[in-house]
Picture 1 (cartoon, rainbow, N blue to C red):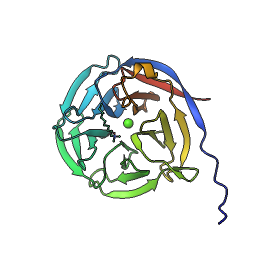
Picture 2: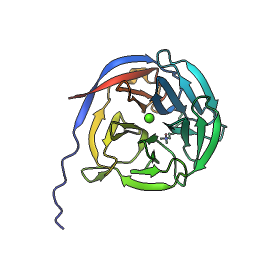
Picture 3: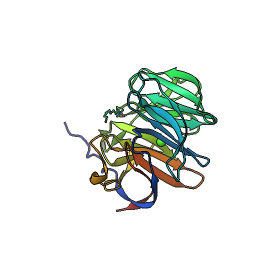
Picture 4: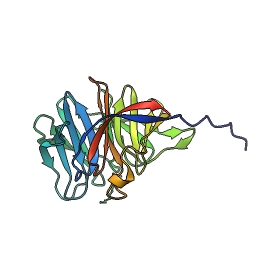
Length: 240
Ligand code: DDQ
Ligand code: CA
């Protein structure tokens, strides 16, 4: 059967480091968010999962709430005075008061939990597949889904997410790539290749992958880090 020629793969951009700061090298980063001068981080691993407020400049944990042993913390998002945190395989997420990090509620979902962000209307969630789900932030009902694809090829393993100027940025697990996704269609508009940002020699093992994107909308700053990374970077995306 004849099929039309696929559209060209999305363009690949590179990066420049603007600044870097210390990051807790024992944090298995699974969620990262910045709002109004405050940096929040969700960490994973059984028995070591937490939700923290972190001082950007020093990496010092200012306050934190720990998850019980059975939970593996995943993506986080902030909306109003609420922080949301997914867990990997427990099909349960938690809601916190953003000011105190006290747990104030929970919600459930039928998939794995990977990345989480929000676009001002919906929570946007990934689950390891190529599907992004848009959830009502009050009822957690699925409003719509999109399949993420580049030139017709489905892109799965979408991990930490961030809504940046009308696009969803997603780390692809186990790679140094961020996909810039059109939230209306799921089409990958471009790739940011962060290879070399934290050189191999500074990583302690294979799990130390890029994971954690936060956007400071007020200051137009893009932050990235990774699991067990000793640094958190502000980067600028540039043509290669
Ligand atoms: N996920 O974030 C991709 C959803 C899950 C990652 C799970 C990785 C567990 C590996 C544990 C290795 C500890 C050093
Ligand atoms: Ca994020």
